[in-house]
Image 1 (cartoon, helix red, strand yellow):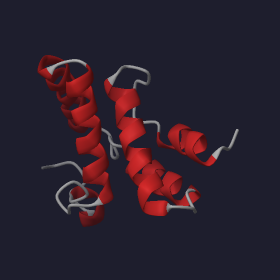
Image 2 (cartoon, helix red, strand yellow; image 1 turned 120 degrees about the vertical axis):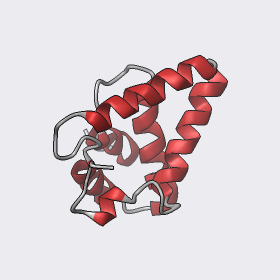
Image 3 (cartoon, rainbow, N blue to C red; image 1 turned 90 degrees about the vertical axis):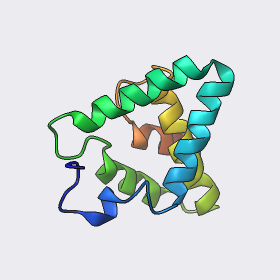
Length: 111
């Protein structure tokens, strides 16, 4: 994997079994149950396309880190919700990129 080659914290965010992985898996399950497997495959293709972009931070993990720092109450539950809701919005086409701060604002109630 050439994405995030110099930052192991970002490179292994999915394989570490973290809240991030649980939120992403829940979002995939939602897309599959709400629609069908074909829709999920399309959503995952969209995600792979983001990873292949020649930008330094295709998942916008710097913004994810900032967004997760905004969450102070029920942190594990709300960070899982941050990941779940952000990927849902991306997969369903409500956003064209992973909008971590917008989702965090919804969760913590900031305008």
